[in-house]
Length: 219
Image (cartoon, rainbow, N blue to C red; front, side, top):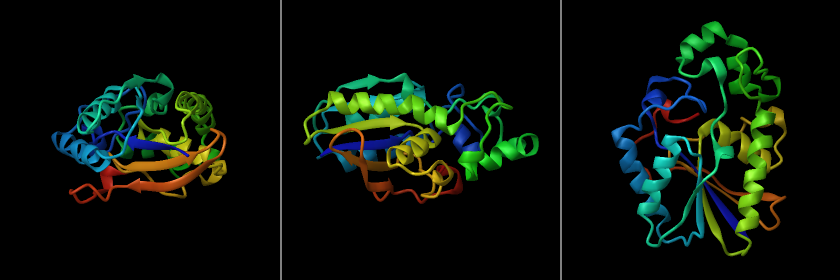
């Protein structure tokens, strides 16, 4: 079966500060994130990948480039705009504490009740909208890597990956957050035979990272 290796980008300054980035925000990757990218690459070094795909947003694109460097074979990289992070409208760049004060209902729903998340007030995307734009990209990736023995890398963002991976697994909208969050530079693996049905092989694997996890690593 085709295996899809989903990797969240390295940790950024806004991740550390507890700020929403979204598709429109992008802060620098932390120096220690580059070492974690090396660790991801070394962990995956012996897996033969046919192709890599990444969100064009810098933090994901740079993560992809650095991970690929560590592999023992050349892997082509394609940027796919449909893999970008949630559009979070007015919340982008805001500290979590400030969002909690200004948009308490939206923040609670975003984190805990995806089926109740109404993005109209902040001018962002709903979970359904994100899944609906990402799924065709995944289906196209699957179709382009038709050999059942293929493995592909997909670099994207914490909230978007959480929504899309659970969506591919058929998780009900209300339960999208129940598997927990995804840590920076984590690896989650799905496999599929037909691009319509997916099985979860591994969720949020960070066993290869030497740094201890902190509260700001996971979304």
